[in-house]
Length: 157
Length: 468
Image 1 (cartoon, rainbow over the protein chains, first blue to last red):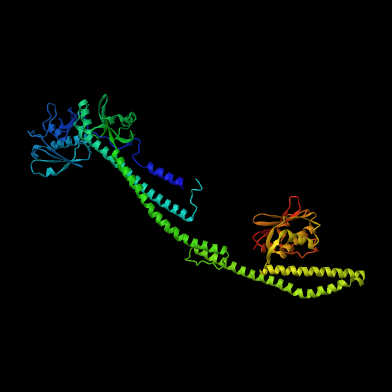
Image 2: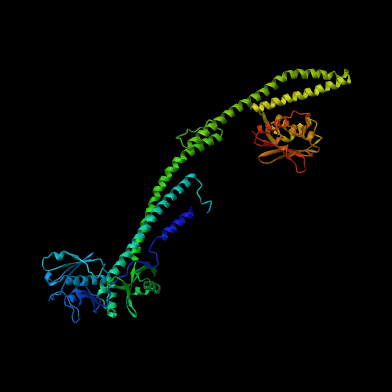
């Protein structure tokens, strides 16, 4: 009887405190580093084409869209977005949805241009560790039903 | 386990068992709840720390140049917090003394698994959590490849341990609080069980002491009540059989007394007739003379037997009364031997001036019986020795015969016991030693039989000096 009691006390005391453990898996490692950002332009055949840009790291969606709105630069790609002076895009990320407020009206962008914006934003989101099924809503300056559509990128599925 | 330390009483055992069971139960419950709580606490703390570190890395990672330079590593390390080590190939950015706790084995595990991992360790008596993770590059198609950047963070778990200690303390206090309650309950339970047991014990004690009227009323319908009823029944049957035995004994004694009393009157007549016959044997033929002598002897034996029987009956009835007077033991013994003509056949060793308060006739009966037996059954020389100390006087009668066989010894004082079945027709009634013993007891003394060192039978009469 006494021995049982002692054993119980030992077990009781052994359960106290933080016990050392082995190496435990806690899930996916963080991600987000990248040598640069990928922008989407339109090639000579009129199709979406990714163009990697060597920048200092991946950066944010806002930075990537600012680069996109500044145009393809010296390459042989074109953009279907009317160039503007204002390149600042407001980004609002919530689970499953990225909301972009672009400084453009509907008529300043072709559907392919909208895909450029969506793909560039989604590319940065995915490379930052976001989900590939996230949808993108692009809000234009003019009041239009296009602003309420939830879009996906045809190249990132 | 030491047997002596173990409590023996039923109450103590009940108490100990009750208290042990309760405290063990409370301790087990408290321990298991404290255990699961502590596991949950440790797990959630680990998760919180890991998620925060992963979140900090993920937040700052897109801002880092890749491949990173020292500045980028320092930036990442600063974002994660102190006690952090960030490595990229040969580059390394470390901060805090805790970084030294990151073992090579842990780094290898991070590198080979390519996963976010943790490990709890104890260093300098304090618990620590190691968090290690590579930072991956995610391609646009979702594939992840290691970037070569590894982040190791060391976090102190002392706060968690203190919380655990508090939990354990409260568990111990809870178990301790159960103790007085258990004790009280155990006392109540023990009392309810032990009260009827004590009543039974008292009843059994009274029965054993001879109070056959003792009973205990059964209460309830449990096993103890059944036991009580059984004991009552047992007492009942013992009482009735004792009563019938006493009645039979009394009947037998009265019968013996009546018979001997009834025999005495015709025997006195017979004795008178035989006396007359004895005086006129001279004119008889030798055959008739022989018959007459036998008739005379047997009549005397019959008279002796009846007198002995009446004496025994008086002892049995408790009516025998000693007539105590101051007696000189030496003189009394010498008179006894002289009266029977044994003085020259017996060695008497007796100091002078030993006086006792006894019944002279009964002392004479005892000594005559012992010496007579010794002369009849043993061999000479027969010795009578009187000894004395402050409290007792001993009269020792020893013969030089073969002694008493072992199987005879316990029955020497039985009534009508004959040691040798073939020797039935010895003179003497067969009641002599029984009467001698009764006489010794009547004086508060005793009579014992045994064998002397030389082999002869030895009877020792012990009489108290103070008398009765």
